[in-house]
Amino acid sequence: MEKILVGLKRVVDYNVRVRVKSDGSGVETDGVKMSINPFDEIALEEALRIKEKGDAQEVIVVSIGTSEAQQQLRTGLAMGADRAILVNADESIDALGRARAFHELVNREQPGLVLLGKQAIDDDNSQTGQMLAALWDRPQATFASKIELNGDTARVTREVDIGIEIVDVDLPAVITVDLRMNEPRYVKLPDIMKAKKKPLDEIGFADLGVESGPKLKEVSFAAPAERKKGVTVDSVSALVAALKDKGLV
Amino acid sequence: MSKILLIAEHDGSTLNPSTAKVVACAAEIPDAVIDVVVLASSTAELAAQAATLDSVNRVLSVENAANDSALAAVLAPQIAILADGYTHVFGPSTTFGKDLMPRVAALLGVNQVSDIMSVAGSHTFKRPIYAGNAVLEIEAPADVTVVATVRIASYKAVGNGNSAPIESTTVDVDLPQHTRFVELQAGSSDRPDLQTAARVVAGGRALGSVESFDLIYALADKLNAGIGASRAAVDAGYVPNEMQVGQTGKIIAPELYIAIGISGAIQHITGIKDAGTIVAINKDEEAPIFEVADIGLVGDLFAIVPELTESL
Image (cartoon, rainbow over all chains, first blue to last red):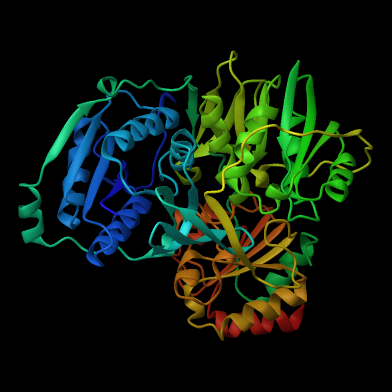
């Protein structure tokens, strides 16, 4: 195939313990470390490996968000992507809006494969890939842990609740990746320098000629209910006694 | 009145327990009329099971050989047509529902409400975000269909004393051939299912090997418990992927959860927060798992677990 399109979402780093703002209007993101969504990083790594095996010529990374997402796109370019597209969107665009934007980019770029993370770790929605596949009327293989390309088709191993499912999809297709597909490479300093020279195009969300979906209104944010403080026991017999006390054994 | 179309999950012969939990969620919506649709290659047995679920108004069965392997690309166009006249379309937030429902939502031109944990009104729902570190109340627009998945750990299954009418129907739509099922490799186990077990014993990286997990199996057998694992244990290859508990694995709510050698990353804890009682056994007294544990025991799991198994 000629091109692989990879989505990179800028999210709060997975190590950050997210806190709800005291007025319930959102979560605290000021001064918080931001990173590429970890699943998206795995998607990019897989795209790069496919290219390195000679099965694709170009890897394009795409982000939809504020201009700050340039940082994540530059990281993607340093990992080895050939060029980047930033779809500038000031407000938080919903999943259907993102899928529509991706669909328009797909129409323009005609990739043989779109690789996305199976979910973003901020909203935990797990929607964009499936929605893109629907709009594009192409196959989807979600929660993938292995991709074997075979000419015009791909055999995809999916991690599902009861084990492993294997499907064959005709290309082009959308594949969303799970954690165990690969381990993303580390970026080396010379690659960061090189990445500065790679093309990064910006386009406004409105200029794509697509619209967000019917808005889901965010009414309020709250901290989750805390669990009551527990007790510490010092022996197995005390543990068994505590379990018996609760009627659990 | 809310007319709710609920997509049944099944393995071809048995309804998945997730379906009865999604019904419980749908029944919380004021004035809900709930129709369950069974899409399968052979629907009679499945539809009969769905008809017993309390709160169900009617069961629709769509029998089609193409529905044999529950591919989202095949099911979604049928559901998008069946959704006509319904205010809500609900499915479970299992890998089946997570795969399918956004495809339905996009065909209907709406955003999806993912992982409903509670219902605040016909169009207002609460859902977890940021690995459960925040709860978002969300209001869906009233003039379009609500497509949603339900966080099944938040609901108890409805009873099965009903005998709802069953109607066969057909859906006239071209189905794609571009996605083909090859095979399913299901973990074979006589143990209780992780997602529905009343008790779960889970192991983490500290187990250190495939063989050491025998300690977990022995304790689980004694308790008639399901088995879970942390991401670290799955990544290390000690146990298969379907045992992973957490943000990106399974979200569970057993009465008893025993975490052994699991440090308790936030991504893991989000998967067990709704457990009745959490027991933690870990040699590191600073491990974050102790912050959520109801009963903690600091010490060497290789000494503690055999002794615990023995004394039960």
